[in-house]
Image (cartoon, rainbow, N blue to C red; front, side, top):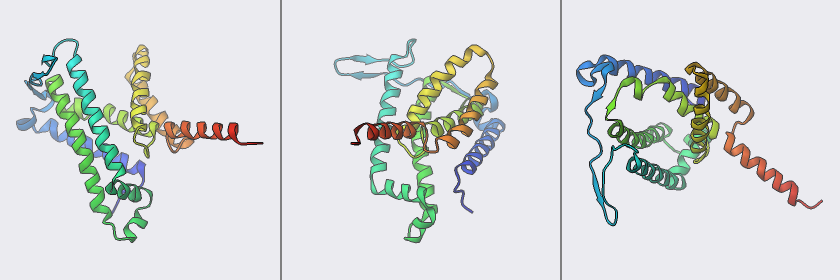
Length: 227
């Protein structure tokens, strides 16, 4: 049995993350349970020509910010090249119509597993940086329901069929939720997540970014089309 509809994939992903979280909380001998893993050393200092010795983990966090930015841009460029490659076209074909892709001889299950492994690779890089940045990780901090909903909402808001859509989505949500902090209720965030996940696919199936581009293209067509 294969999951092909996005809502079911989201539900299964959330359920699987909750299972892993419960296992991590109870596997005290390995993960130290809810106390988490502490004492993780910060990123070791490096020497850069013309800049000298760069020390990470200090107050202000400028070196950590630029390292995170470099990881982000490097990952984004690698994903961009992947999307434009033959493998990327196979992923798009499977996303659009798994039955048609399978009918031409593609092993859909194999490529889906490969896609999950590639995504896990980039998540692992980010997770490694995050662990050395805060020097302590807990099951609730890494596998919380709020973090999962944030990721799903950003993807739905920006557009699931675009490369830069989720990036725009996470920026919009991050800044928007900072303004919602004045309300003092975390439950309001989940209400916002739920409304966005329901309303955006209903009225903008391609996501906010694609809808904006389509609207701008339509305006341009109306302006430059001779009457």
